[in-house]
Amino acid sequence: MIDINYARTMARYDRWQNQSLVAAADTLTDEDRWKDRGAFFQSIAETLNHILWDHRIWLARQRSDNATVSEIGERHPYTDAPCDWADYKRQRTALDEEIKTWCEGLNDDDVSRQVQWMKGDTPVTTDFGFNLVHMFNHATHHRGQVHAMLTAAGIDPGSTDLPMLPEDV
Image 1 (cartoon, rainbow, N blue to C red):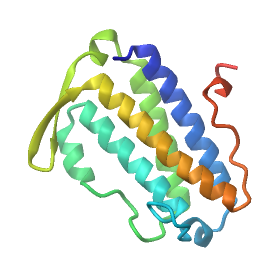
Image 2 (spheres, helix red, strand yellow):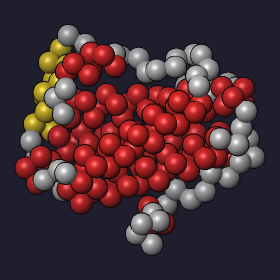
Image 3 (tube, helix red, strand yellow):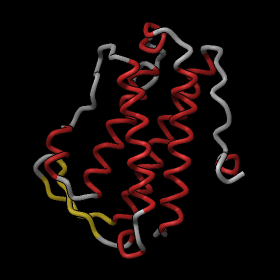
Image 4 (cartoon, rainbow, N blue to C red):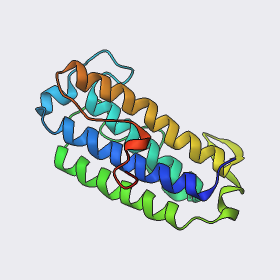
């Protein structure tokens, strides 16, 4: 389905877009980040938290790290309550680097293997490449929501176009 170059490119793109949105959200007050703006996860902060949680859970699933999946749980962190923004930014930056480094270490056999994971009590087997596409696509979807909320708040989060990826321009 995909090759390792796709994974590496998307890890770089993912990191760039997360940095862009976090920098834009950094210009807001904590209250404004948590303000209900009518999105699926209500606020900018809640949506960013969902993306962080989703990256953690899919990375753990891809690694067949069931202990981490259990530790992370089915709900993302900081649900419905303001969090320490500096702590969130540290976690986001660290996870982006971890994903980028992990993708750089993948090989062709990795992207074509099957992954077993649990959805609740149900065992599931899916294609590694399919899971990776989902992880990046899902984050792009929710970042689009954050981008729209920031734009509506009068903040320009910058370009989202893949050809503008700084390392590739």
